Length: 187
Picture 1 (tube, helix red, strand yellow):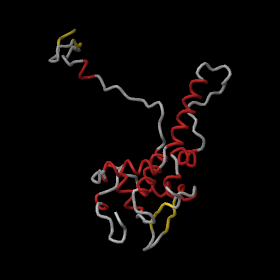
Picture 2: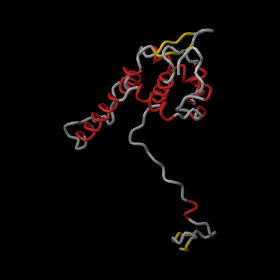
Picture 3: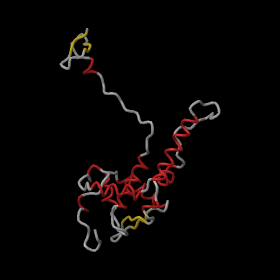
Picture 4: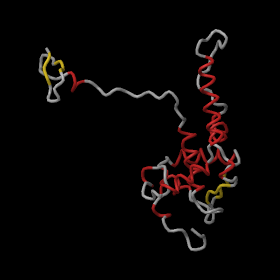
């Protein structure tokens, strides 16, 4: 049975009078390219550190809170970033996490490949017989070229320009506790 809804569009109703519109679930969005949580968290950690004054040691707990990263996962990612030579992690009272490579020398491609290996969008078992192989290869090459041009310093600069110091609980930005830099570091 069809009927017109309040919005003027027709919708079917079942025997009990429930509209099919109301029963329909929202369409799922399936990503074509999905960045792994490990790479996403690693980039967010590095940007968080790059927004700090040079040499500043951030507490791991603070990074986890500001970036909304589960602490157990944070420590695994920190270990991988340290093994890749991006950060230094010290434990103890005067410890913390700091960048040891300049942020302008760390590209998104470097980070992704150091954590996940080569970037492959669509592994093709038969490249010579696959009609889409050339298309996927071109998209992959373009994406790698773009990621190789984007640095952690670029992202940190965008983060600073946004000046959004209140998003700490949502992740992706420095938290409000860093709105005032310590007196020994110029702002």
